Amino acid sequence: MIQFDQVSFQYKPNTPYVLNDINLTVSEGEWVSILGQNGSGKSTAAKLINGLLRPIEGRVLIDDTEITDETVYQVRRHVGMVFQNPENQFVGTTVLDDVAFGLENIGVPREEMIDRIDESLKQVGMLDYKNHEPTRLSGGQKQRVAIASVLAMKPKIIVFDEATSMLDPVGKKEIIETMQYLHKHYKLTVIMITHDLNEAAYSDHVITLHKGRVWLQGTPRNLFQYGEKLKEVGLEPTLVTKVYQSLKRESFHIKEEPIHFKELVDELWTLYLKT
Image (cartoon, helix red, strand yellow):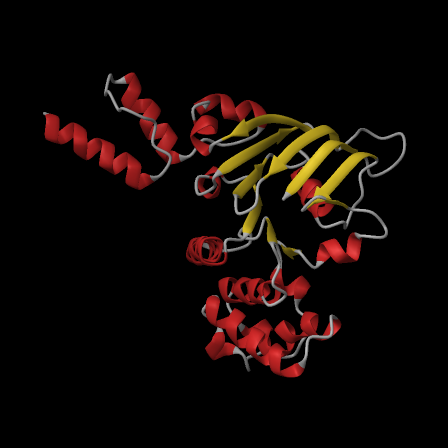
């Protein structure tokens, strides 16, 4: 579904490359997190996926179509973007107007538009708010409206670019649960740009960038096994990882490193039953 073929990018001539010779693939229906500290190139990669930026070298392909001047608008119909600040995506005076905006731009017939608006708002739990002003909603609600606006366009891919970074813990939980539901219900390909390993734990695969290069591609469990070494690439190990490492030093024999609190609790419960 997504392919980077020897992609390099710089913002200005004679400046360091932000991305340097990147090769990666994302299969249809996968949930992939692109991780890295600030300046690692992860948000640049997100913008390359939907043609907001173009590589200096190499190719970006979406569903086997290379992004070019001729194909970029066709590609963007298949790639939805949800940004860090949902207010930057609001254009309507009501939630309904906001979700309708993109559909009007691509000429969706009115009856179909009404169905799409109601369906997308329903799927993110915001149907009862369709006549509300977006600016009066909570942070999590605003982000769910932004997701509904993208979902109504029926994309094959949704890119979440640091979409939870401005939310409180409750809002983050709401958005992650919404993402999980949409990924499962619509079989969408999900790309999550983040520096938060707790969020990355929900992914099928992770791609970790460091100084514009791919540092690791694998499963969340592959990544978490690096423990404290993650700090070398600007990532903070999760509390679950820290607890696991402490238990390991105390000779607690946990079968497999947990990546969620539930897995940690299950492992500890198993150890307790054996004693």
